[in-house]
Amino acid sequence: MHKKTASPASANAVPEPMMDMNMTPLIDVMLVLIIMLIITIPRQHHATSLPLQGAASNAVKPVTVTLEIDFDGTISVDGTVMTTRAELAARLGQMARSATPSELHLRANKLASYKYVAGAMALAQRAGVKHIGLVGNEQLM
Image 1 (cartoon, rainbow, N blue to C red):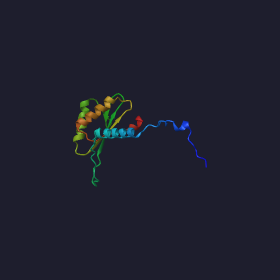
Image 2: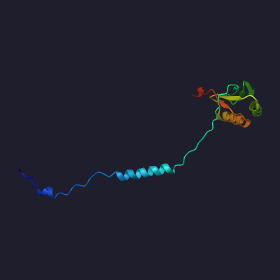
Image 3: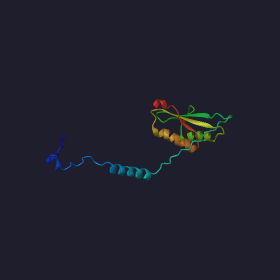
Image 4: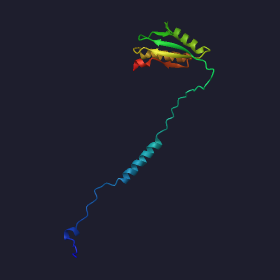
């Protein structure tokens, strides 16, 4: 049997340094930073209350009032043109104070300026209208 002898060059060789980086400390630091970020972010509490109606057998069907806004800002309620804001406010106030429940369906022309639509919605809200719906939005798609 032959005994292998180490050559003098390999016996005196300096071991090569390890070229791989130790990732464990880096991962530990990143996990700590993520946990600190999660703890310090404030929780968001955005809530919207939606009144849900129970199943009532004698539910009264609400009266639908249609408010249309034309491209030039002309506002009509159920086909009747409102010439002044006071006239519109009076009509919306009458609708809000009626004994029967009512819904306001707002239909705006796609060329109508936003200020007319927002003004009509604000006027309806100030008059006390509780149920406002936007209809005819398929023309905007």
